Length: 131
Length: 131
DNA sequence: CACTACATACAAAATCTTTCGTTTTTCCAA
DNA sequence: TTGGAAAAACGAAAGATTTTGTATGTAGTG
Image 1: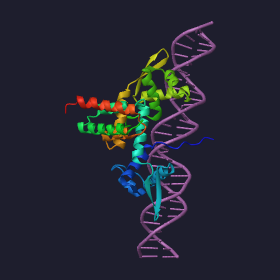
Image 2: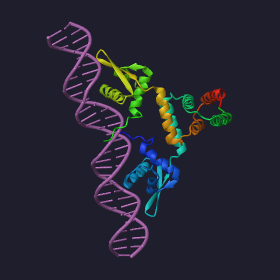
Image 3: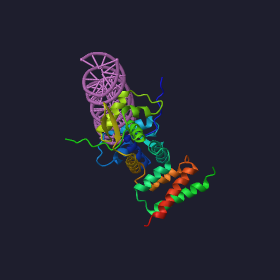
Image 4: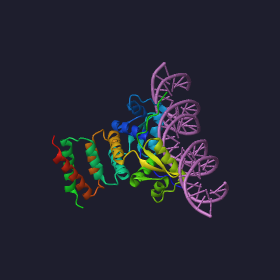
């Protein structure tokens, strides 16, 4: 019998909801629903289902307050950023982060300040590393 | 009546196939199929279907040679890298590329070499910039 | 020619994702 | 206490993606 592998990545809609939850810190289904993009028209039950799925998959947790659940993210935005970047790097940049940065820097006119900021970050990182 | 919007992004499997085609430059269904990951077991007709879908969606084109189609990418890897980075930046980094790079270099998995490579890239960029 | 090997074409099964409707539960105010 | 408003639970419809089987076409060979 085959064990269903734990989901690593969020689906489109799951990411949409996690993003709102990250913004909120924590919130009920109704809170999250209210924060969706203006045009977005989604039944309350649909939103509730998505939150329940997110919990099943282990991306969020909930505690009951009165009769309603309050959700909080278990997966942090930072962690998911890292995970997504790693995935993109593997799938599209031959696992060479430098080429990813190269493409990014070529595409966007990053300000001198932004570039300097990043470089300082690198310097600090390189100093602290002992390996 | 609603016009079906042109697909912007590749699905999981489509990306898998495009990646092989980018490596090959051009190739038949059989060529691409042969290049898939070792464990990957997929019927020939499945591969053919995927290539046909890629063509329908405008990501590749084909020319008939004898009785078989030879496919070539219309969407370049570079262009798709750009598109994907932009999407990731929007969806997960508030559209600020600098924070994306910051997260990337914060990742502990990066080797010293990779970090140095990125730094040199930035140095060159900073020297050439005139603004 | 007609046989064979291999290609394309396409409908549809299988699976995963997204959305919703109905039923059940729960709190609270009258 | 009980009736109503709002939430949760859940099955399943609707939709998209992935995979396959069957039918059909075509080039080349004896």
